[in-house]
Length: 318
Image (tube, rainbow, N blue to C red; front, side, top):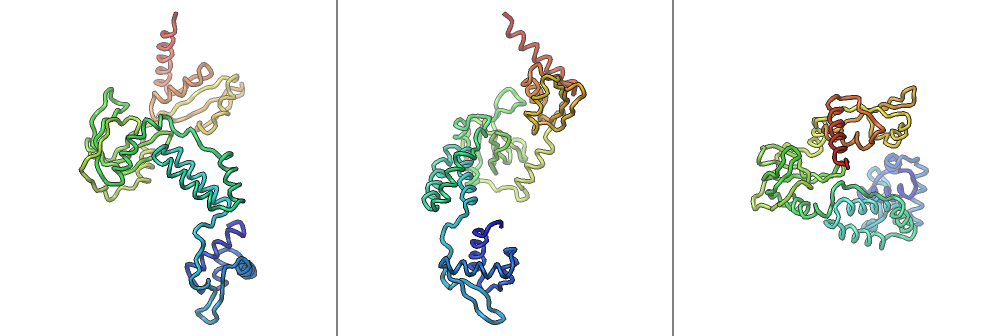
């Protein structure tokens, strides 16, 4: 707690939740001195918040019986956090939660004092998150809506799923447990009826999804966070090593967070390494840099990039 306003609000909540607390206990919880805690009591009194003390071994400081904290008391930073949160909800979920997010924001702005409204207006125009989706959110909305409803009502779904491993969609039954957004994609996590195990499905690859009348019970030992962590660790990865010529070394600096290692050379060139889930993904990343880069490892990536270049060149012969 780094400011007086936050400490005062916390002090009110402490007194509201547990009456008859000693000044030394409250000082310890707030991380301030006894002198400061008594100064806070004086400040609360000046604000019209009734605090009184009872003497004796079981006595202490309390709020006057029946006093309750106003329904909404936020610091400027907390107000910004809530506003930015509603913006993220609208960005991630689109029309599914757009009206709810905007309604919550309108109510918040109507209740906030002028100082915090100005802070919120600044935040909305200066701290913006966008471009989170790699696929059209509008196209995914019908599937997301049905999956959200199925998760809420514990209902199975039937769907066609286009895996990147097979050329044609396959019919799947799914007990959906959760919707997860990561790496720019929406995913449905649940128990797959075909494989009889927990699987993860990219929502933009789902089509013709219908809700079943059959309900399900989630596996008792399933933990979403643990599953996602394990999936990230066991996902097959291609370790790629690229060489950037000296004239293109500046491209490395522009994507520092993408590289696992960066090794500058004496001639001004740079070698970098990165991981990709598939060889195709690694090839696409490599070709995005065009002639500025050369694959060092692995050999199969060099072959794929070369083949793609040859095929592409043929298409542009005139």
